[in-house]
Image 1 (cartoon, rainbow, N blue to C red):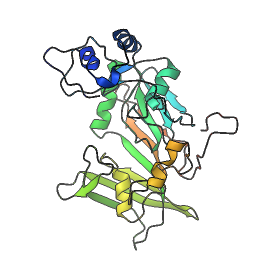
Image 2 (cartoon, rainbow, N blue to C red):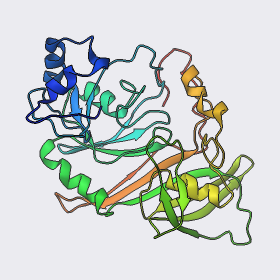
Image 3 (cartoon, one colour):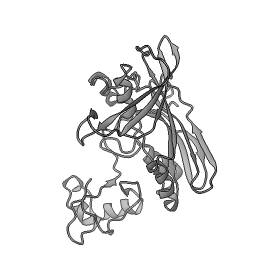
Image 4 (tube, rainbow, N blue to C red):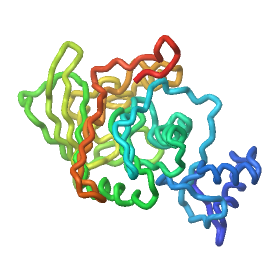
Length: 302
C-alpha cells in the first residue's frame, strides 16, 4: 500500500487509517511488525513506530483466503552467510503483491529459513522461472542490489518459441524504447531514445519449437517477451504478447499450471562485490519441461 503520510505521521498511524486493514487491531499490527511481516518496497522490515514517508510503499503479509497454492518447489542452488540463490518456478511471484502473498518466493524463503531479513536483490516476473538471488543480511543488501542497478550482472535466458521466419537465423539484436504505464497490463514500444536492448540467438529446433538464448543488456518490464513477439516469434505460453490471451492468463487462478510461459532465467554471472570472486549460477529448469500439476501424492513438483 502507498502511505499517505501527514506531518510527523508514523507508519502505524497510516495503516490504522486504511479501510482494508480495519479488521486488524493495534496489537495485531504491532505483532505482525515484530514478526517481520511489515516491509518496505525493498523487502526490509519496518515497524509501525517508524516515521512514514509520503508516497512510500509498505507491504503487510496477510494470508489471502482465496490464494491458489503454487504446487512447485523453490530449490536452493547456493547459500552462504550473505546470499541465497534459488531456482524459482513458474507462477511464483518474487515479492508479495496483490493476490499473491504467501505464494511468493520472499515469503516462502523467510518461512523456510526462519529469517525475516531475506530480501531479493532483483526481481523475476511471476510467470518467469529461473535463477533468483536474495540477500540474507541487511548490511550486504545494497552491495548486491547495486550490481543489478549498475548492470554489472551478466544474464542469460532461455525461451521456447516458433522457428525464426526471416533469412537471418544468427544472433539478432533488437533495440527500441519500451514504456509501461502503471495499471496497464502490457508495455508498449514508443518513439524516442533507445532504452531496451536484447540479443536473441536461435539454438536447437525440435517439433515442439525452437529454443533461444536471450541476452538482455537492459532491464525494461516485459522486454524479452516484447522483443521476441516483435520478431514474429512470440514465446510459447505468453498470455500478453503478441496478443492478450485470457484463456492462458486465467488458468492458474483455477489451479491449472499446464501452460507456463516458456521463459527461464538460465544464468546469472557477476563478480562478487564483497569477496571479488567470480560467481555463476545456472538454473536446472528447461523451457521444454512440462510443469503441469502437483504429483500424485499431493506434494509439490520441482
